[in-house]
Image (tube, rainbow, N blue to C red; front, side, top):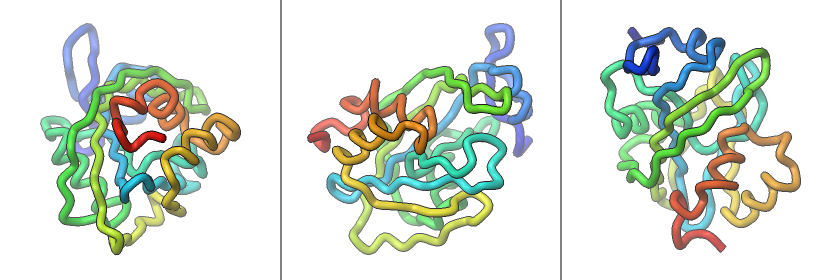
Length: 175
C-alpha cells in the first residue's frame, strides 16, 4: 500500500494509487512542512525526475501520508527521506485545502496538514537526489516577495500557502 494515499471517493476516504489521484484530480490527504531558522525558511528545488512540477521551488517538504499513517509521523518520515533531516518534532500549524493544475494533465486537490519545524543553525542535510536537486535558506519576507514577482519559479501550492495562509502558518515570523 506504499503508493496508495488516502483520497475521498464518493464521499468516503479510501486508498487510491498516487498517480491515479493526480490524473483524476481526486481530493486527498497531504502533509507540508516548513523548516525555519528564525525568520529564514528552508525551501527545496524539486528534482528534475519528479512526475510533476520538476525543477520548481517548494516548501521544505511536501508529500502524501501512506494509508493509515498519521500526518506528523509522515512529516518526520519524509523530512528524513528527502533531506536527511532527523530528530525533529514538527508542530501542527494549519490545514489548507486547495486545488491546482500542476501540468501534464495532473491536478493536486489536497487537504494538507501544515507543520513547522524550528531548526538549529547547524542543521545537517543529506539530499535524496531522486527527490531534491537543491535547497536554499531564504528570509520569509523575501520569499513572499519573490513568489509574487517570479511565480513561475515556485510550485502552485507554495504560492497558495504564502498568498492565502501565511498568517496561520508563520504567525509572528512574518514581516
